[in-house]
Image 1 (cartoon, rainbow, N blue to C red):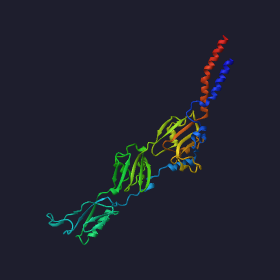
Image 2: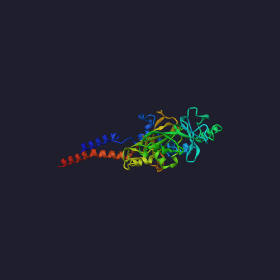
Image 3: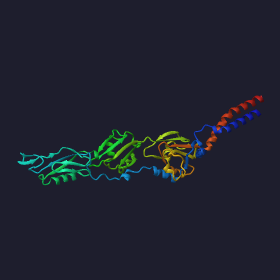
Image 4: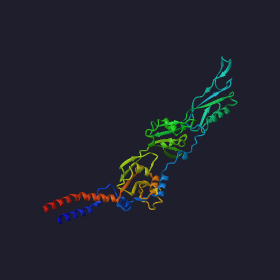
Length: 389
């Protein structure tokens, strides 16, 4: 019996000594909190998430609507530019002096004049074209009506009551480029109709990926902004008119986050281009495990833009391409955290980790003790039975 007691004691001491080596899904809350002083994670920042920090990150990462960045007004008039091709047609009242031919119309028994269509001309870099008897005329930066009136005025006194029509046959200066994840990239000519973002996207065959995983990026006059495609579809105000020289890029956003630890399911979870909150991310992973999760040990591991954290940390660690490793901690023991996580944005490649609660570790340890002691206890009972016999 004494040998049995000593053996049991020895086994308990061995288990207590090795309890730190028990199987685990990851670091505990305390181990993560000590990451700033850990040599293996030197230079990492640990920030506790509150409402102020969550709103700051949300505002910094929120997209700016196209209507706010570029406005909703389209080009007022179609203006001719270098590279455009124009065809000028001129009529004269009979008898024609300079343009067209004169013939007898048998139906009405009167003279008629045919129009004179000049060969198509490309607007050169000086912005001018040539018209017989009118000379070099500046057309760049002007509307078709302005050019017609200018030619008529120059021909007054030379042609017999001239009438002029200018037609655009090629307009490379009034095009937009549509590229990216579309059926076929192309340059789309703009017309006085006033084509919009979705018009151009439909012209090239539409996006090649699901709408919820796509973003539209618009570049205009040195300014670039992007928005989720499904938001542009849902909000007609964001479907703004295009302007000459715009570059529209359809981008596939295969964004995802990874969730580990004491949650419903450890997995990589894709999410939409418009983004999701931490509350949504936890819900999609099955939520916190009631039997294991430490509500105060919810962490988000991320490489963050150093500029966003200048106020939170005066001495920033060594930067890597403008980004620093950060661990955000959320304490769900505080009921206010449920509101905070609705504003905390999840970004691509985030790792969300939920630590095990200490009681879960103790329960695991006790189970291991029971697994080891049960055979010993059975052996002791057998020994007692033999002695008694």
